[in-house]
Length: 616
Image 1 (cartoon, helix red, strand yellow):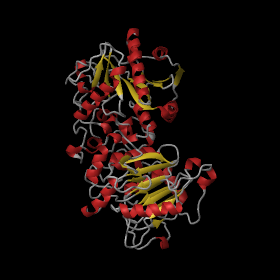
Image 2 (spheres, helix red, strand yellow):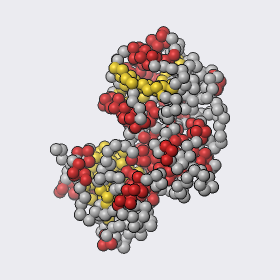
Image 3 (cartoon, helix red, strand yellow):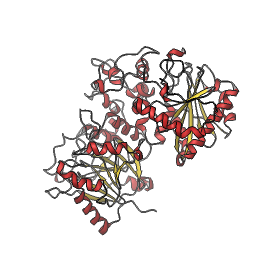
Image 4 (cartoon, helix red, strand yellow):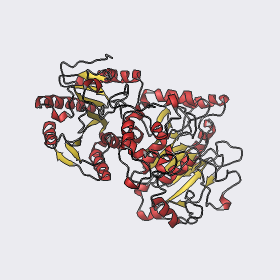
C-alpha cells in the first residue's frame, strides 16, 4: 500500500511569511519531507509595513520551500496581488486546485473540491459578509457549489474554512474548552450547515487565535467520525500552536473497518438540532421530512421551514426552480412553481421571484421584473435555445433576429454557423447552430449532415491539437426551439470517464440511456434519427471513442433542460458553472474570446467559404 501523504497545516499567517517558512523549512528538514502546506485564516498582512517582506517571496527574492495553498484571501495588499494573479494567462479558466500566485504558492479561490496527493480536499475561501466584495468574502454561489459536492459519492478527507463553525464546542469535554475560546453561540452558522452536510474526516479552521484539537465526533448518516482542528496565528505571543503535521491515509484507500473505527472519547455531533437529542433521535430528525431541507437556508434567512399555505407567503424550492427536479418530490415543503421556473429560465432573479425584492439591487446580474415569453432577454439567452417563439425576430439563434449576439459568432457556413457559448463552461466551448430555424440538427437533409460531420471532425482535430477531446450533446425540445449542438472540450485523460458519469447521472434521475457503439458519425446520427419524434423531447450525447447515448423523455418526466452541461460540470469538478448565468462575461471579454478562437481554429476550419463576422 502506498504511504499516506504528509501535510502541514497553518493558522492565520498575517503576512509573516518569513517566520512561517523558516519554521516550515526546519520541520521539513527534521521530520519531513512534507508534500504540501495548507493555510487557513488571514493570509495577508495586517499593516502596510509588512508588505516588503511579503513581496520578497512573491517576487522570488525569497523562496517558498514546499507547495503552499491558502484560503484567507484578505488583508493588506490582497486585492492588488490577487487581481494580478487572476488576470495571469496561466490562471485563465476555473481552477479548483489553485491559482498560482508565485512559485509554490497557490490561491484557493471561492469554493471547490480537488484531489491533493490522493486526499479529497474541499475548501471555502474568504469570510461571511453582508457586503459584496471581489476578495475576502465567500458568495452564496460558493456555498451552493459545496452543497452540490456534499451529494457526490465518496468521503471528503479535508475541509478548509477560515471561520469556526457555530456550536463546534457543544458536547466537547469541559477541560478541552479554554478561556480563549468564544462561547458556542458564536461562529459561522453557514459553515455549521456545510460541515454537517459534507461530513469531512478533518475540518481545519483559524481566525480565533487559539489552538484547539476537538475530540472526534460522529456524523449523522455516515459511519466515519470528524475531527475539528483550529490553529493559532503565526508568531502569536500566547504561544498557541500555529503549525501542525498531519498524515492521513486517503479514505479511498482505507478499509471499511478503518473508516468505521471510533476513537476513544468520541462524542455526538455538536451540530444536532437539540442539545438533549440522542444519536438515534438525530438520525431520525435528519432523515425525516421536516428537518432535512437545509439546502434552502440560502434563501430563507429566518431558517423557518414554511409548509404549503403556512405563514405570510410560500417560499419557492430552489432545486426545482434551478433544475426542474427536486429529489424530495411531493414531500418537499417548498413550492414547485412551473411559472416561476419559466421566469427563472428567462433570466429573472430567484430572490425577486421568492421574496418580491432582491437585496443585491444593481449588483445583481439578473432581471427584477417578470418577462413575457420571447421578450426581455437582451444579452441573456439560454443555451438550450428557449426563446419561446419560432419567429426569427424573437429567436436568439436566428441570424436575422435583432436579439442575436453576433460578436459571439466565429464562422458562418452554408448550413450551420459556429458561435461561442454564452457563459462558457470552459474555454472553446462552442455551439454548432443550423442557419435555418429548425428544432433539431437531426431534421436537416442528408447533405447537411455531411457538412455537419466535417465540422465536427474539424473541431475534434482542433481539440486534439490541444491535448483534449470533444463531447457533443444536444437537447431537443418538443416545443420546437432553435436547435444547437454543444461541443465541450475536456482533457484527454478524462475521456474514459464521460460515459460512466452520464450513466451515473441517468441512474440518479431514474432512467438509463440507449447506446450504440459506432465511431462513424453519420451512422451514429442515423441511429439517433430513428428515435426522433416531434411529439417528444430527446437528449443525446456523443462520447469520445464512438459511443452515442440517447434518452427519449416521456410525457410527464422531469428532465433538466441543462442536463448535459450539469453532467459535464460535475465531470470537470466545476459544479458552480453548471448554470451558464454564473459564468457571464462582459461583451468586450466575449468579443476577445471569439477573436482568439477564430485565430486558433482557422487552420482546422473545414468550410472553404466560411465567413467570420463581428457585426453587431
